[in-house]
Length: 407
Ligand SMILES: Cc1cc2nc3c(=O)[nH]c(=O)nc-3n(C[C@H](O)[C@H](O)[C@H](O)COP(=O)(O)O)c2cc1C
Image (tube, rainbow, N blue to C red; front, side, top):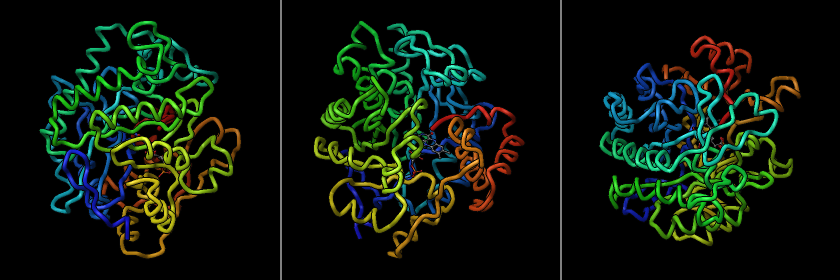
């Protein structure tokens, strides 16, 4: 079985199998941006479930720029490394790995967290998202260099604390993606204009990380196959950027798509035909796979063992990314590896009101609730209702949870 085969990354590290848990923001840091016991419990659960690689939910590199409430932050001067070390140890001796996803939200900070958002350029959100997110201000050259250095520092901490690797969040409309997109990057200096200039930020972030962690530590990126937005980062540009990153020595490219304004990453706002077939981004990923020399992981919509195996066999990708399936069933990887003809029980969630569903992804709250349950050593509640999750999460996180938009 292909999914059970190990894979060697360009840096020389080998991952145990072809199944990876894609990032899901945990939103459960303690005061001080501290990853407490719940992180250990949750990731231990996934480790025991057999997944070869677990990528953490996004960890921020600046406490003044959070994507959501209760994010973990890695930043100079923060005394939270003990929590990170314990979290990193959750895989024990399973041979599986945890990588940390590093992120800067740029303009995608909900207003309730801050109105001092920054971005490549001062481009406001489309309606109706502009009610939830303030118009950002344009980053100065000095601020851009500071952010690049922060990514490098955070990656070094990730390595020193014992994690297996690091992933740059370059997808879903966050800061790296804001620099890549001609819709949000209208700068006229060396960071904007042509795609060569727009990709300079991600290249410098990668270089800064690599300089800090060395050649033998895995460094990956999650990036969009396209933003699927008019005037946004196009598929042709995604091919160019991934090709460049692969030349520079990136170890794993995870492919996704969409932004907060066009949330195709979880299958929302994709064509019905795309939703019905598995793997929303597979067709786009095939082009990228042909253009690069490093392993490709594709995330979004994979549900059956049969299709995962077929896609790997066809050489369309090297790793399968799974998010919601392992949020409701942490044992799913072991079941897939056991060779059963397994199918995930993930199904579309609805509030019962079409309008509400179209403006607000309540399912994100529901899935976060499942992560919190596992963090407390409880079982995920596969058949729990959406309103009881909103109630639980409001009790544990306060009304901030209702401001979650993501992913
Ligand atoms: C609750 C939740 C939180 C998420 N948080 C993140 C995140 O922090 N970083 C990220 O890159 N993607 C995030 N995602 C997106 C997933 O990684 C993945 O791309 C998406 O859910 C599609 O995969 P799936 O169909 O296997 O769920 C999140 C998704 C969910 C459901």
